[in-house]
Length: 581
Image (cartoon, rainbow, N blue to C red; front, side):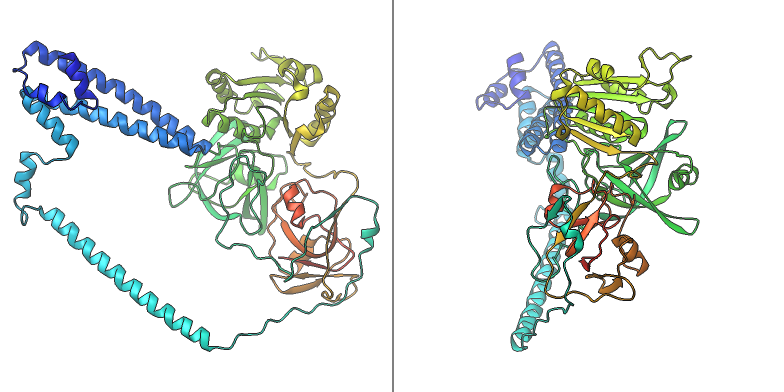
């Protein structure tokens, strides 16, 4: 009997139904045994559904389509097993003999109508229910309508083709430009980055339909010009992390998934009218890139920080915020190396936390070492969650130190992050990939410490946080040159050079001490920006002709440089320029 029940819970063999049909009526004890077996099988398969659902989430987050397909099959098989058990329980509960139990199960698998369903369908026409008749009629009407629309569209298309073939081909005009002498900066002995090609038409074309979702682990971690998503998101929750830090959770006002994809470590840019002025500020996305229902930014209230004061003091749940996203190259998806060391200070933990959350969501097997420093335990951001994740993840190792821990229950390390603290917290540190994020002073110190330990510079990825962001540019300038055409826009007024904005069709004087962004603002040419310090990358612009110098270019990737991209907030020149804006 138990063997027969096992067959009924799974895919029955061909000989199962004849054997069940020939069985004598079941005794009360046999029915109880069958019911117990059915319930046990149902509970087991429900657990299987939960496990398969978890595997499906991880597979989707990690982009593993084969694993996602396998998990979906597991869910479907487990659902079939649960349905078979429920069918058996229903038959047993109704006191049916073995023959009727077999018939009920067979009909449920074959999607055959029960006598009650057939009786209900008798009220229709020709044995078909009114519901099915109405549905088929609506489908027929819809199909006819679509056919009419298709025929009309083809008629219009043919008419348009006829008109075009009869019309004369228009001529192509090439823009005129004045001759430009080579910029004196080209003779500078400093590093020169030359673009490999020049646009034959003077202006490249970009898709206007928005960005393609970035693939985790790809080399290009920022969207192309014009490819950033821009719109409004609604604040659905605000969480207090520390006395001076809050997390703002945002959702699409229309519901559903957030309208852009991003990589762990990228940021978004807020824009708001504050005291009659448009203020923009970039903040790292702290939530997991595998989470599509919302996006979070964790913001510290800075003394004198106009935008952070606005967010902490005025923004409430339900408000709409203008957002530009995503941007940034300070990313880690797990494909870059087999392990990673994340070092952060203060609110600089946010991009590191985004990586930890994402790696947890996709069940990344590599080793994760998080080294964090804060002023006091009261300022330890995400402390509770990190303690939970460390218990949950065998591959997550957290080492934290507090500058001032006296008078608290803190049992960990005290003081700054030092060379000794790093080597004790991370094995084989010199061989590890390191992501470093925090205030500029801390970053400068730790870069030197890591170099003394033996970590190669190319293995250290950095991103600066804090009010001093970009205040002290690295020594020297980078020169970017774009091959000029035979003619360019004439200089205007007392300026030694001019700049032409190709998209906006505007020409303006270009003083040597003004950046491309500053000149664009003065003539009303829209170029998005955020930090104005060369680190966020929001103001990336395509240089079509000319030569520029940039003091800071942290936000430009190798691919950006190869394509002739410049940072409008940093780019200056003593020669004529043509940019895409």
